[in-house]
Image (cartoon, rainbow, N blue to C red; front, top):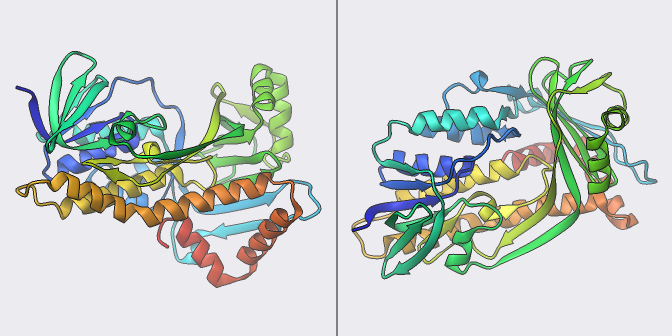
Length: 385
């Protein structure tokens, strides 16, 4: 007979680990199905509410032991267009905050999540992949790539943009592939940026430096694949590009790690739960890395999943289906609002049309000069609006 669980979480990224741990910590029997993966050498800028959630459920203890505080956000319009936005600075002290959030190395977060879940009796971890799944009655029957099988009432898809769970549940998706790509690497700066995240806006996307402690920063540079790959392939070309893109504000920028380039796309689902299956993280939403929303939105998925599970009556027939419907309802507004905001912001930066440029410029002027809107923008960016 197949091993029986309340919940099966498919996918081994940070959102998948968080969802599996949080559900198991809440008293549900959970199987987390994810193959071993290479180290994730990216970083994540997590806002205050996301850090609060991780601490509340026990995924991390002291953020200062794992990450670097983000106390300022500086936006510089470097497009060179006729209609340019003013330089804008947000300071956490202005909003009575010690920091907007923290910048974490994904490797360290993953290690913390693994450590937190190591002794949970309600969490079973299987380092393999989902091969097939079929829902019979009120139960999902799963066949795994290692030849084993198990069953669960609720299926959680944390399996990325090409989500198999999304396909199994028949959840529709809209995807747009951008012409731009992103280059990421770690840098050493001649002049440190302190606790300030600096975002230079260029016609093909932002060039962002995020504090990584000391004189180090994490780079996220969005541009055409041709530009990024040419820079990555030639150390001299990369050094020149880094100096130009940073406007030499921080002196010489020296790569500390290899540069990685990946394509950009956006994903929108028509609902985040259906037929006793729910989607979290990039299985439910994906967009370019602008505004630090991706992983933060994924952790808000986990928070709403916990709320939906808290309302579940496991003794009632069909509780998993009801939970999926409740979760989809809870997530609808946030997914639509955040996805639309990030997509619009990114497209306005890329647009050659004067009306779009004018709207973006007016928007940044307003954010620079109108305190209530500044507070609203920060609250929205932190997931509190």
